Length: 512
Image (cartoon, rainbow, N blue to C red; front, top):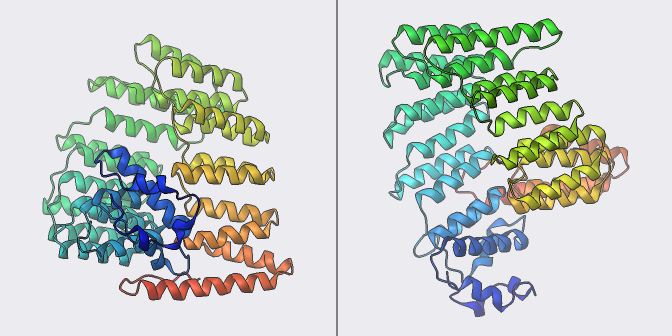
């Protein structure tokens, strides 16, 4: 990308951080992916560090003289995925350019960003815009919106959106499976079955093993194992053969959603699991590593560390190589039983055998450290996790650590985690902002609570009602009414400005 008019650049370039080296790096025209990503990193930093939170369109003025290419726009939006207002402002700016660098990918990404903060009207208008620009929306465009609608509990709207896809593009059985799967994952199994039966009657998509497996999963998720078994029976009667995935879903339902205490319930669960194993073998299907991992998870939940280790050894003897899920289940069991040294040994064995740990593996240790209120050990392991580079922390990892450091009143560590989370792109999201603000309110650190409350809204996240109430009640009880009035004035300005800047879109104001 190139700088067209550096002499007209915005005042931000007076900052000592943006030296001539900055201009040289932006002037690179190489098509290498690393160069595009570096440029996107620089542009996103400009927008994040120098935008006016109450006049978001001014953020785009920072880009005066910078040529936005389709690749640069996409990667910049990717880095602004947690800053919906700035992302939308940048996108609007790009549309005003002589040759708008708009692509199907950038539209899909912005639709996801806006739908994530529940600005569904904006997402719909972007889809209409795509079609008007001959960037025809694909099923994946709609499925991105559909996932967010279902996550927000707007299930009927999601189903109607799926039916609308055919007006723009041709759907496939796999697309239909995505709709059913998303409904089931969020507990809307009855609606998924209703949609499935309606499809069967219309013969729009022929039922297959994948569709039935998704519905069996949905009933198992609700703990309705008998209904799941009924769908398995119906599947077989229609001549659709179950596969190992189908049986693993049923096995997971038998094992995961049951109480394991007292001991008799644990033993009954293991017997039921063995019955599924036997049924698999009768059907000519051998249990795989996932099948054993599900049973290992039962041992972990029941706090049976020795049984977990014995089952792991049996797997290896049968020639089944444990995967990351298998090892994580055993490590979780060892950690929860206080056997941290054994868990660390197993983690080392896992790495030596070529199995890369995931964030969930490390989270087992962090949860135990949180229970022990051992912040130093948690920081030590977190540093090792980062140094080893085997996996990156997830938002859940940061959530565990931030909660722990808030409870221990380690404000410096909290801010360190927050900054690291932003750098890695793992967050923040609504849940993490809520955890952080509530934690500071609990420790009566009103300055920090107000700071992150404003930052949260600037980044496009609508606070939950309980967050408003906790902050308001705390400030009033602390005789800080003037602080609350200043805060509310800012929020009112934000609401008005936000609506006027994006009047072409049906944005909902940030009010409760």
